[in-house]
Amino acid sequence: MRQHVNPLSRFFQLPLQLPSPAELFVHPDQPIHLDIGCARGRCILGLAELNPAWNHLGVEIRRPLVTSADRDAVASGNGNVRVLFCNANISLESWLAALPDDRLQRVSVQFPDPWFKRRHRKRRVLQPALLLAIAAALQPGRELFLQSDVLAVIEPMVALTELSGCFNRPESDARPWRDDNPLAVPTEREQYVLDKNLPVYRVLYQRNAHPLPDAEALENRWQELDNPAETVFTDA
Image (cartoon, rainbow, N blue to C red; front, top):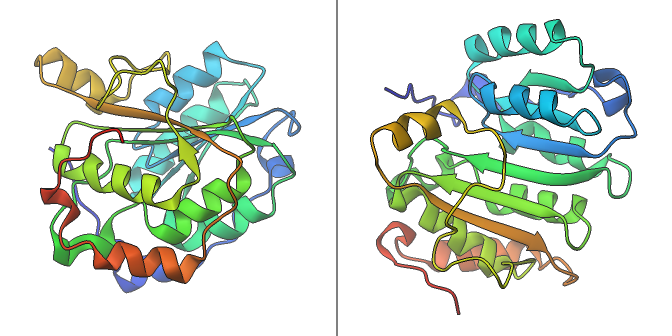
C-alpha cells in the first residue's frame, strides 16, 4: 500500500538548498542520474553499485524513507549515490539550474503517487516548471524515463512532456508503451507489479535540440486540457 503525501501542505512548501555535486559525491564530475520520487532507494542504490562511473541521486518527499535510504547510500562506500529529502517541485529547479553543462544525463520518474483526478493536478510530481527545469539541464540526446502501473498517472505525464516539444521518443521503441525497462534495476513497486503479472507502462524520451517553450504558455496549454487522465495518448 502506497502512503500518499500531500505536496501542497505547508510543511512541504519550504524551499531547501540541496547540496551541490561536490558535497554529495566523491567524484563530482561524473555524469548524474537523478531519480525523482525514489521511495526507499532500492533502484538508485542498485544502479550505483552496477555503474560506479556514474553518480546517482534520489530525491523523495517522504522523510522516513529518505532517512533509511540515505543511511544505506552512505554505508555503501561507493561515494556515488545519495538520497535527499525534498519536494521536487519546490527545491529541484534551482539545483538543476546550478549544474555544469551536461552533468545531468538521465532523469527518471518512476511510479509516482497516483494523483490523477483533475482537482489534484497540482499535486502531481511532474509539473510544467519542473519539466522545463529538467529539459534545460539535459543536453540533446540525454534521457528522461517515465513509468507507472496506472494509466491515469502516466498519460498526463506523457501529455505534458510531448506538449513541451523538448523531447522525442527513440524511433525503435514500441508504441504507445516501451516493452522493457532501460534501467538494470527495478524499483520495489515495479517488482511488486511484475510479480503479480500486471502491466507496467513505460516511456523513454531523449532531449531534442528544440528551445524551451515559454513557461507561462506551457502552463496555460496544460490548464486548457480538461482532464488528461481520461485521454488516451498515442504516438503522432
